[in-house]
Length: 142
Image 1: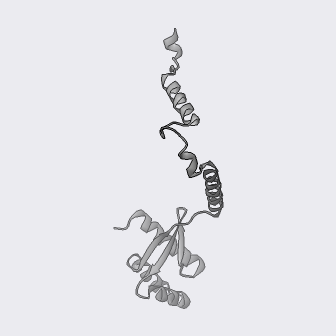
Image 2: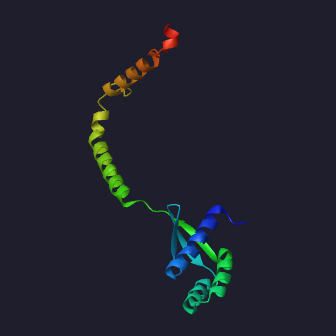
C-alpha cells in the first residue's frame, strides 16, 4: 500500500511531467523538498516517451513509477535564519568571553565555595516567588 506522502510525491511527479514535459530531479510537496532517484533507467524511458508523445506508454510508466522511484527529504535551513543564528552565536560567545575571570582570581577566595552576589540575588528572588500568594477568583472573594 502507498502511504499518503508517497502518493502525493508520485502525483506531484506526474503533474510536473505533464506540465513541463520534463522528468523532475526534485519535487516540493507540503512545503518540503524531496530529491528523486529513478531506478532501472526509468527516467530515460520517461524522457523518450515524452519525446515520442506516446500517451499509452507514458501511462504504463506512470503505473510503474511507485516501484521505480526513491525519494529523500532534503533538509534546508532558510537563508534568513542562517544569518541570524550566526549573529546570535557570535554575540553569545562575546558575552561569555567577557564574563570569564582569569584563573588567578579563583584562588583569592578563602573557602573556595563562596557564592557570588548575583547568584545570591537569584536565590532570594526564587524563594520570594515560591511564597507569593496566588490570586483569588472573584467568586471566592465574595
